Length: 228
Image (cartoon, rainbow, N blue to C red; front, side, top):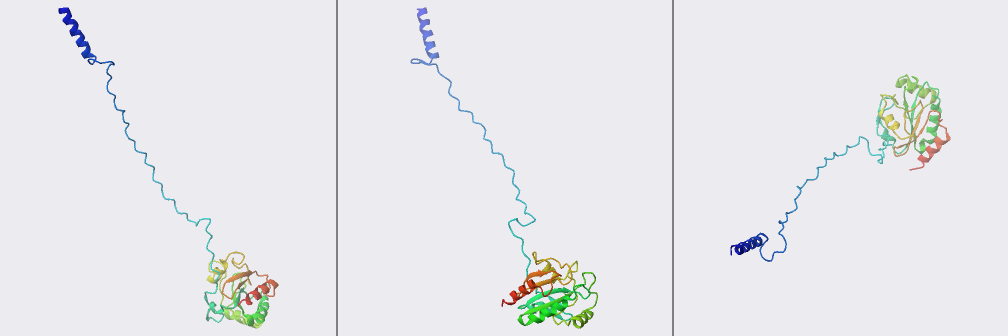
């Protein structure tokens, strides 16, 4: 009897340990949830600095051209009277830096003839005495006027002495020199000639050696005179 009770007790204990009746598989521990990795924030990108503005304009942007209009100046004539160059607007103007003691001074004669031949058609020649080259215009305005009228019978408008190059260059010649090639650039010597159309725009340049009777100079003057 004791042995029978012990056997039953042992069987009950075994069934309890293995989950009771109907148990077919050993119990497994409950599945643990997958371990979540801590969220990582994306690395902050360094702030980009705004691009520095270039000092120069972009390469594809053309440089601004200087104004070709050159009659916007008031200047003193050979007698010291103020003259507005805009009074010449509507005419074709030949601007010449002149000198009394130059190897090309004889061009006064040709310039006067050119003026007489074409002034009725609208040509004006204006002379600007300058002492920038070889000290070849050292006299006063009175000396220059006397020389021009007595030696070459000059009647085209003459102005007071100015500087046509260098640190004291007159604004008129700064404007002329600032033009794109082949029109621009400082005069290289006396009797450099700048040709201005009826609208006051400088359109051509002729160097010292170009005579007032030069075929190309006269052709361009006539072309401009033909345009009303």
